[in-house]
Image (cartoon, rainbow, N blue to C red; front, side, top):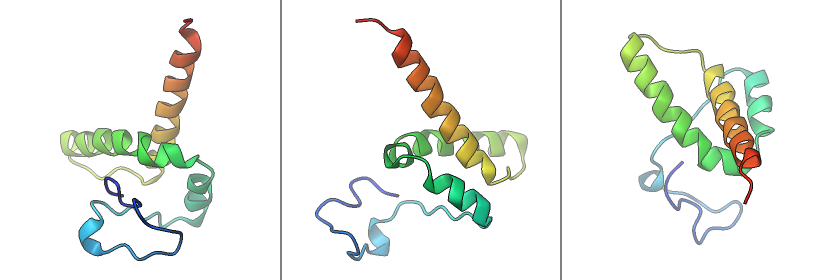
Length: 90
C-alpha cells in the first residue's frame, strides 16, 4: 500500500520496496479469501482508515488485535458510508 503505488504500472510490474508504505499479511487462508471479496476501492480508502483506527486501539489497549479486525472494520466502514450516502437526498 502506498500513495500512487500503481501509477504508471501494469499488471505484473515490479514495485520497489521504497514505494511501499505498508504491507498487510493475513496468515489465515479463510481471512485471505474474505479479504479478496472486498472491492478494490475499499482496499485503498477504507483500509487506510481502518488501519489508523486499529493502530490507535492497539496503542490505547496495549494489545495486538486479531487480524480479522481488518476485514470486519473495513467492511463496517464501507457499509456505514454506503448507508449514509443512501440516506442523503440531493
